[in-house]
Image 1 (tube, rainbow, N blue to C red):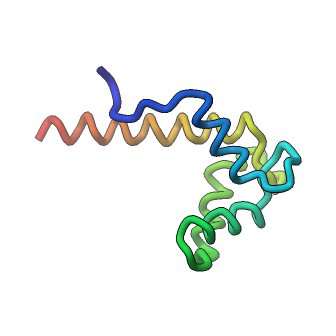
Image 2: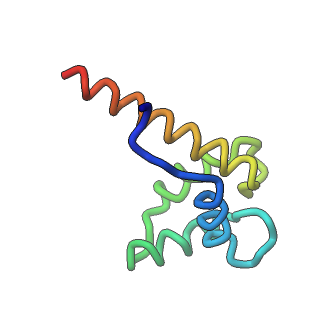
Length: 90
C-alpha cells in the first residue's frame, strides 16, 4: 500500500476553492497570503508565500490554475511517500 495519504480529487477541489476567494478559477499570491493567514492566525512570512508560488505556479504567470494546483499537490504527495518509504527502511 503506497503512501500514507488518501486524498481524492474532491479533497483537492475543496481546498482549491478555499484558496480561490474571488472564484476566478485561479489562486493569486494575495489569496495564498490570505489563506495562510487564516490557517496560522498570523501573517505568513513573505519567503513562505514566495516558496508556495514557486512550487505551484509552474508557468510563472502570477496565478495558480486548477491544473497547476493538482500537479503540485500530487508532486508533494509523491515526495512525502518517498520519504515515508525511506523511513520504513530504518
